[in-house]
Image: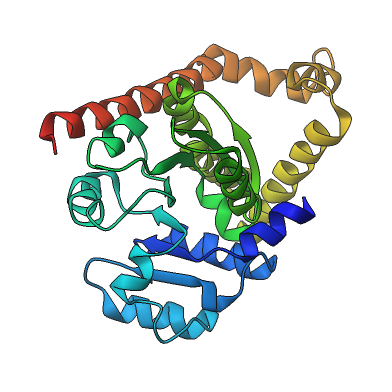
Length: 284
């Protein structure tokens, strides 16, 4: 690991897109001392003030937004919205060259589609972090293209470890990753909203309902991670016959809640695949 960290410290990293995910990665890299501010460069399509704010906040170089700096970076992170990928690739593909590593975090965008813009053998890694990267707890999955070396993959792994945990999967599973962990935080927030509202309806003050809900989620996650037990086993252990938990679970089962969440993940997975197909129709 120390060798990989040192290797990353030798790299210049350019970000195409300066949204929340780019900022989270930049913050993670700097906070974990993987790189220094002088190694980071970034640009976006139109918001100059956003760029200046990030430069000031993270102590980046005054040259951080220069096109030539980003184009010549060792690692280029494509962090635009999926719909903006064609325009971004048409512009930046002419500036990228063999020996660089392109990391895409655009949902639904296949490696082959990105390669179709390139005339040289650029190494590509496709990744799907989630919004928990903002607090250093992202669940990220990634895969790599045919030109990516072991060193390229290790560099990408180190970048995403700076904002949470990371797994490597086959590209055929990336849409499933998007549907599960990419969209997953929204599902959790949705449940938290419901539990908070229920607590208030039952008579609790809003802040108390919120804090009880959040601590319950945190504690349950810690139980799952530390005990090594399956969720079904832990659920059974806290469900006494004819008790309160059983009454609540019976109501959830009556509405087929597990099935609904499964369908939500599958629907998001399908949408991720559709987004890629829609862009392929646009062409290069």
